[in-house]
Image (cartoon, rainbow, N blue to C red; front, top):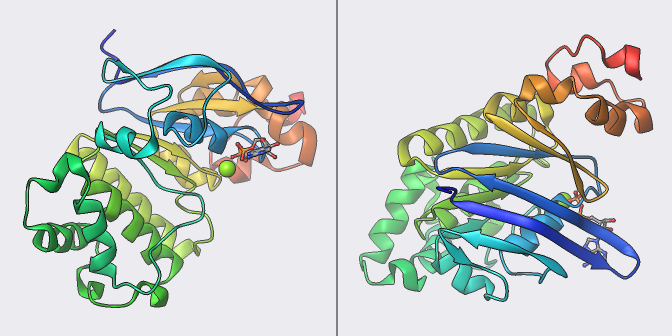
Length: 259
Ligand SMILES: Nc1ncnc2c1ncn2[C@@H]1O[C@H](COP(=O)(O)OP(=O)(O)O)[C@@H](O)[C@H]1O
Ligand SMILES: [Mg+2]
């Protein structure tokens, strides 16, 4: 009942394809939860539904006690639900700090004033303080992820959705970014829902995992439970011959037996 986000029976079809099928779950405040699933499982579509970029065919979304269906994306941000994108979307031709100032202008926080000072503070927090005056075009993928997180955090979200924050990053950039996410979660008590493919880091980051396949939730549990779950193993090993143990950084004793 105290859930921050409550999703019930969410369904989204594209023509004959059901990208999200009867998805129900709840997020408690302060939780860090992961969404796992092969390509095409419906993870990004789920984020698009939660943030108002797409309208579901069926189902309900309750956020902070208020229904969200039919609410425009910018109004959803204003209620405290922010997201980052699988492909980062910086405002090209602007500096790093100007990109974050845009986030400070959200009605939710606009009245606080001191926009540039707040933007610079946030850049310090995400480790981009020294690059505040650089043009965004010059940033690495890792820095773009940090910028995007800063731009969302200045809106003071209650829930932050991260869509594959480690995608395209080199190994040396992943661990520091994972550490930043962990630190933001701890210091802000921020509730986080994260989609990720870099499973080793992901499994160390999240407390609970929701596993999806073909639009449906196939399992929910701790990372250790999830890597042992027959349907998760089937979704990964049954199709591509992937080495689940190596990819997850956790040893599921029965993975090969079932595969
Ligand atoms: N705008 C769209 N129009 C048609 N099909 C889409 C659209 N967005 C996603 N899909 C399809 O829905 C399925 C789920 O996609 P997506 O949510 O992006 O998966 P994931 O993020 O888990 O990789 C895929 O089969 C994809 O091709
Ligand atoms: Mg996706």
